[in-house]
Amino acid sequence: MSNAGFLKSSIGKKVIMGATGLFLITFLIVHCFINMLIFFNDGGETFNKGAEFMGTNWLIRAMEIVLFVGLILHMVQALVLTLENRKARPVAYAKINGAANSTWYSRSMGLLGTLILMFLVIHLRHFWVESRFTDHIAHNEYEKLAGQETMFREMMEVFEDPIVVLVYVLAMVSLAYHLLHGFQSAFQTLGLNHRKYTPMIKKTGIVFSIVICVLFASMPIAMHFRFVK
Image 1 (tube, rainbow, N blue to C red):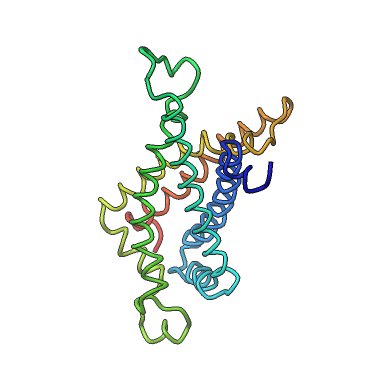
Image 2: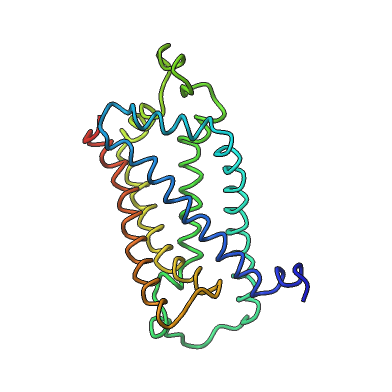
């Protein structure tokens, strides 16, 4: 089978899903690390330096394109695989006891993914669009000295709204459940499973899913209640 034929096959599509999933997990780690800089509690100075580096470094800007391509591929392959699975079994079984062989979140990846996508649209509008396509956010010391808004101030303003904070927290709950299945599934799809190591991968996935999402959720909560200033 040619490379093109493999990528069009069901297995090939799952491999793309797994590879892009692991790439997006790597992005989450980097993104979380940068955001955690707010907890230096120094008026956003350290966080703003990190945000400025991410927004002006040419390699990071190039990786944004790769990130969006990976995200789109992940979503498209998920949609295609879902439609193919439904087409392969057009008539539902009379009675399905899904809980007997799988968790509810593994059966709800489509729904969880849709909720995360809706959140991403809101999140990108709040910060990425503001910092990349408007002159509202300062990108250097001269703009900051001129009194222009910083990314830290933008976060403070956005998270003043308790409804926005609630949306972000609920989105992190959805992401946690999505990762609980997706983390291990990505390794398994790529053939990176072994009787000896798979249990460790599963446990690592559980810890990662909880920790990363708790950290992300803690940021809007901390800023809303002014635990960081």
